[in-house]
Length: 327
Length: 95
Ligand SMILES: [Fe+2]
Ligand SMILES: [Fe+2]
Image (cartoon, rainbow over all chains, first blue to last red; front, side):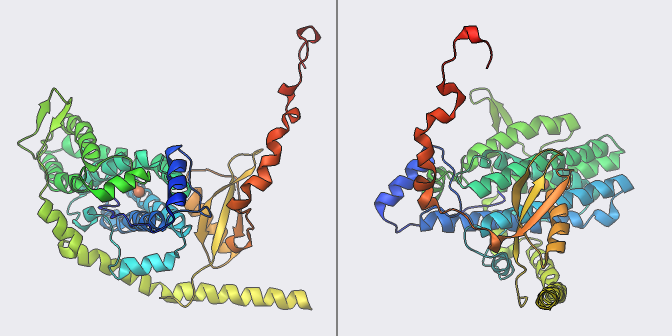
């Protein structure tokens, strides 16, 4: 997902405190920043929320790529608004993460040094305008699948950020789907472009949920802490069930010859993505890893003089006010 | 890395005329003026507000979770502070 394969940190805290903490979570209480929490809970959340925030920020790059080339002024405005929303999502999440005792600059540092990850999906290129459709429809669609349950996550600031994000996310998916509709109903070349975008984004979207974790101890701990609500397989299945009819409506073919309706489970059987590709992309060997991280680092470094300039100005103003007050 | 991280601000938004300002989140900005500008962009992209307050996070004093009992438990036994504590006969009518 936007946070993939979150390994759970162990806690070496007092068992009595741990049990009381778990009881609070089991009662459905929200944990707030200054309250006692196990060290493992805190660290795991920093990893998860941080990775989620990084994904929102890096996720602007493949779409930002098309803002200047959107086919109409209206589409340009829509894409700009969508990308701006993603910046907002990143900021909500960074501030939620900061309540756990890490600064935003430190989080940026960890992203830029490669110590922290962002979602594998953003390491794929966006080659045509139809990709803007596929990204909104599938990538934001997959993100929604994961984010809706997270509104009930146990950590208060994270849950509240999710509520905000979910409110804004549905526009993202719908604007993407309407791009796909336009393309699929257009000329044969446009329809082929839409099909090609679906072909390229289908499996990477399925990978967003991460490999099966039904037997993972990390996943079990994170679920007990309610910082993970569903297994990866559950969410992936839901996503496929929702998406297949949407693809059919477009008259497009889901690129999976094993796709069959399973009456018993009332869902689609489908092929797993190539997990070796997923691990390679996570490790840094995706088609765009270097480009994405390079763009992030450059933006951060190029903006340094500006950030420092504003700080210097603010300090000067504050000093002037102080001098005035003293007169 | 920059020399200094921009300070953190807490953002409060009045959603509609007549309502209280409500805490919506936080953000980084070099000074109060920029904090308002950022708050506009981060928290009111869809007309969520008619007024914004920003407060340096460092200026907020919060009650500590461990004092929760001492602060809030005393109100628990004071049921007579609620109108439902008093039985008024139906004949009296609405009160
Ligand atoms: Fe987002
Ligand atoms: Fe989105």
